[in-house]
Image (tube, rainbow, N blue to C red; front, side, top):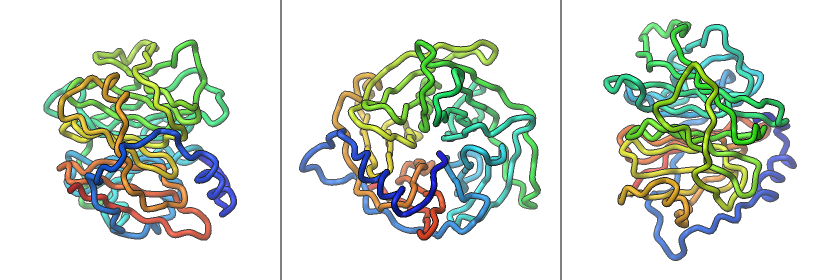
Length: 296
């Protein structure tokens, strides 16, 4: 999401859109407080809007910027250093808003999913998800071009032109879920596997959440922990009983104590499920950090 990074605008987002999603009461957090791992100083990631833990490159994270930036994804380390850049050939970054790593057509491989799902002005009837096999980091760090990728094209019900900034993958079912942003309540839509990469898909609503401004979501690799965030809160649903998402999301989530960020739009689970990361865009007058919230 693009917005002017002034102290007044940041305060507006934090205060004006406080969620109505009611967390569980009198429940100890399942996570320790967020720990600063490193400061984000890399100018190429000034508008970072998506973060995902790599499955094929242990200890590294995928990241990308949002609207108006290059169609590039970056492998970064926990010090926020870019280890390698990958360009999607022939693709525009119209408004990339989230990224995930999960299963796909070949069960022996991991895949990267990039969500071309943002729409600040409600201008686009179609949304896209770009999927490609997760590449390995080249120690030379040489920029690479990805030409072999698939495009999942979909529209929301009734051709609704709605801004969305969060997606997650259920690696057990390979279903993709999209969470809208500006509505109140926000809506969760399901793209059920198997899905065509040649046709325009119609997706189905699976839940509505009594909150707003959801900007990121991720499902733990074991499929048991779902996290979502807006600009001021992080929510956690524990699904050890294997409930369908349509049922689980009716439950009140736990609210994780959140280390305030100037414009935090990204989070992702660690691949071992030991906790999750968050990161913020670089906002004028504020420092941005990569945080890690360790699971208790």
